[in-house]
Length: 210
Image 1 (cartoon, rainbow, N blue to C red):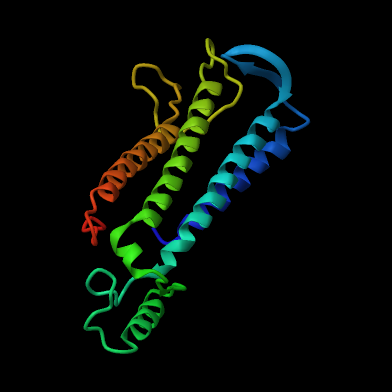
Image 2: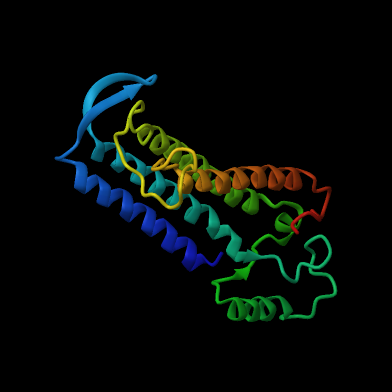
């Protein structure tokens, strides 16, 4: 996924949540629930506003943790010493890579550190996992709020994207939310793989960045 695509997804999610918040702020009063039990009156918009804030906070964390990835240890050769690299090679190589990738890359300040440790990668992976966990939580809330329509909460109505059941005509399943959950489960699982790879580095080189 390109950076621009990810940004578009974030913007769409936040705009959608905020549009829902504006639409329902003065129209839909409902009960807040704690421990799944009725609590105090709130608007549906307040719930959606909190969802938007959660996605925005996750986006900021991801952007903050992504910045160190711009530092590239190219030219560090063996153990970050730069041994046998021609003078000027490091800067020229990183500038060329930055042009080709259209990214603001720069030579690493400490090549030994980045050859030993993949901490910047684990930080980004962790931020993606945190976003995935928030999206799972929000998706599960929306599934619960849309349950019914006769014997569930039925406080929101999800768009029908496919037939829910050949046995029960008109049944609408939360297919998009379930798809989102599955994508997020994959992200959480990959974060575990990244964590295992990061801790497996030994001495002066971690071989597990691939």
